[in-house]
Image 1 (spheres, rainbow, N blue to C red):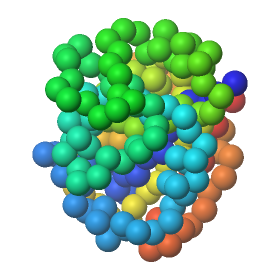
Image 2 (cartoon, one colour):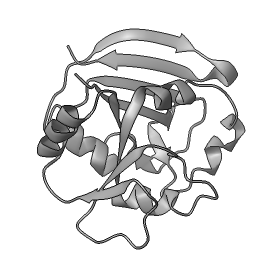
Image 3 (spheres, helix red, strand yellow):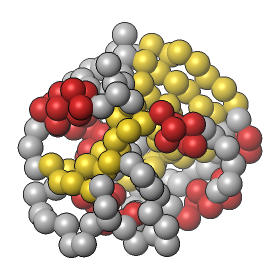
Image 4 (cartoon, one colour):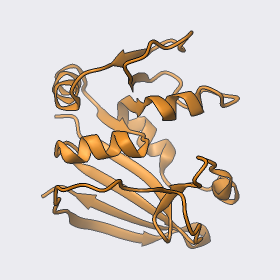
Length: 172
């Protein structure tokens, strides 16, 4: 069965972006191999929230060539790239449908509200969390607050290039 995976970087103080959504603090790590290419080789579908989609739609190059992309949104997309579809319903129903249709993994690529929806529905099986050695002081948190407690099992931890720490957690 397809795994639902999270692959996410955050500052030491737990922020994935500055308060205005800026990611420039990650630029010194561009080009470093933290396993993203391997992840993309193992996934068939990428799920993103609307805010994340609007951000990446402005990138010079589409970050998911050849991948099916599902955007969680209630609003229509204007001229989406090939392979992009919308989903406005429940994430559990979406996950069930994707698991039936996919032979490879499903990657949840944010943002914070999308990640929280999948965590609250207990749908994420595999979390690769990267801690970047910087303190942002404020910004968008890696995980939004929740009333749900989620137990995880640490499967691996590794110090990588430039002091980045990768921690891999699995749902028990």
